[in-house]
Each structure stands twice: as C-alpha cells, then as structure tokens.
Image 1 (tube, rainbow, N blue to C red):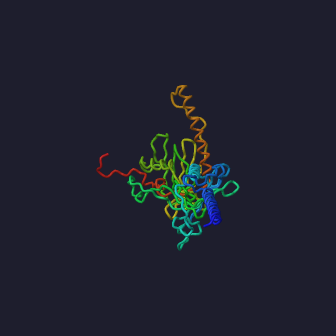
Image 2: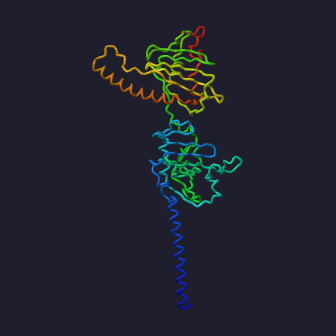
Length: 383
C-alpha cells in the first residue's frame, strides 16, 4: 500500500467515524427527548397548575375529570364534585414517576403488555391487550400529555405472607414513552389509582343525620313505625304505642343514619322515583331530613334526600349554670353552629343528585315494626 492509498484509507475511516458519531448523538438526543432515561421523570415538563382536564379510558369505560370554577368535577356524573384529594394525589404521582427500565419493543408485541390503545384491541370482543389511556389537558383543551399505561410490574417479596403476594407485589407499571411508540418503559409506581370508573372519582362526603329527636318510616311495601325521645340521651319509645321498643333496634337505625355511604351517583332523573319507602328524621337542631329509598332489581337502593330547617342561633341555658360556665358554653355553641351551618349548606347542595346505596347499608334503615319490638317473654321465664 503506497502513501496515497494509505491517506485515502484514513480519510474514509474518518468519514465513517464521523457519520457513526453523528448517528450516535442523534440516537442519544432522541432517547433523551423521549423522557425514557433511566432515573428520569417520564413527563418532566408539565406543571400541575397547567392541568385542568384529566381523561382516563380503557376497553370498557371512560372518565373525564374537569376543573371548573376551581372545583374538580366528574363529567360522566352530571358535573358532580370529584374527590380533590384523590385527583391531586394521582396527578402528582403521575408526574413524579421515574423510569426504572427502558426497552425497544415493536408494536406487534404491545398487546402482550396491555399497551394497545382503546378501540385497537384484539380478541373477539376487541378488548384483549388494551391498556389505560391517560390524557392531561390544559384549560383550553390542549393535550399536554397522552400516556398509555399497561401491565403492572410485580416484584417478588418472600417476606409477604399474603396469598395475593404469591406472584409478587405491585412495584411498577409498563408504559409507552411519550412520543416513542417503540419505546416501552417500566416506571417506579404501579399507578393503581388510574381508574376509569366514574364512580371511583366522585367525592364521597354524604349527608349525616345526628341528634335525632323523632324518626318515622312510611311508604309502599314497608311496615311503618315512628319512634321518639324527649331528650337527646333519653330512652327511645314508639310514638304511637303498640309494644315496647327494643333499645338495640333504635340504636341500629339511628346509627346507620349517621354513617351512610354511597357507592355511586345516579344522573337519571327518573331513577329512584317509584316503590318509595320514606324516612323522616327530625333533629334537636331543628332540622328535618326526608330520605326516599327506591329498591332496585339488583338489590341496591336509589336514594334521594332533602334537608330543611335552620339550627337555633342560641342554646338552651342549663340549670344553675355559672356566668363563667355560660360564657364557655356559648362560645362552644357558636363554634358548633358554624360547623353545622357549613355542613347543612353542603348537604343541601348535594341533595340535587340521587345516589346508589348497597343493600347492606340500607337494611338497617328498613327494619320492620315486628323487628323493633321486644319479643314477648316465654311462659315460665324468669323476669
């Protein structure tokens, strides 16, 4: 090889090296831009304050959460207020997840990791291999990020004795890297709150009936009754006679009214309007709760309620109270009144919707009269 040939060879090698280096840096730049670096956040450029809309969709359901008038609402539930704590926790976790693994995976294999977009699934029903789409948008509707969540990644934990942990505990989740359809990453959190069921996101605070003075059950297909007490800590009695009231029955139904919980919000205006059982509760706070319950074929009840009345502004003086005691009691009453008025205002706002309550929650409210009576003593039994 002469000198001229050697120089040409060096030039060719330099050219090839430069091209390879350029391709290498191009790939590195694309990799960095994809947000798929190990240890990096998946979507680092989004601010929480910019997010005003969250849409979640899988093969079966879809939920849209919208920030309107500074209140998060569930679009599929007629704009019912959403659980702010759940939404904020989910958004913060989504923006904070870090990449722990990154691989190039062709589109033909995405179904195995449940990374197919809704509407593009396999199987007879078109749902096989479909993941959960999460879209984050701003107030103008501009999509800030579109993320596809796939299978949950499990991690073996030999110290966990639970049967559900036999195959491992949730430790991460497969996702498509933003802007890279061939880049599958595993992030540092399973993101199990990425729920597409609208009922999951509604605010679960509900009305609460306490300090009950009288309680009456009437309506279609129920064994009606009315119970009452003269003082808040007094003994419950049937208001119309007809047997001795069993104390545990009265406690059961009144406790149930102070601890009600619903499973979902109902937006159908006609739902829960027939075969009604009506509970009417009057309280020592001058409030009246009217609760209408309609049984459903699957066993649940549709419940609608209303709240009327206003709490007393002043308290009833206690016997032989001293001036310094009166001042302390008046202050406590004023604080209690403020909280009660706020609660009633929220309950009245919630009363425009109907709610679905599980059968086990309602069963304590619909006791038959014969279930509330002290059973007769068997002949010969000691008193």
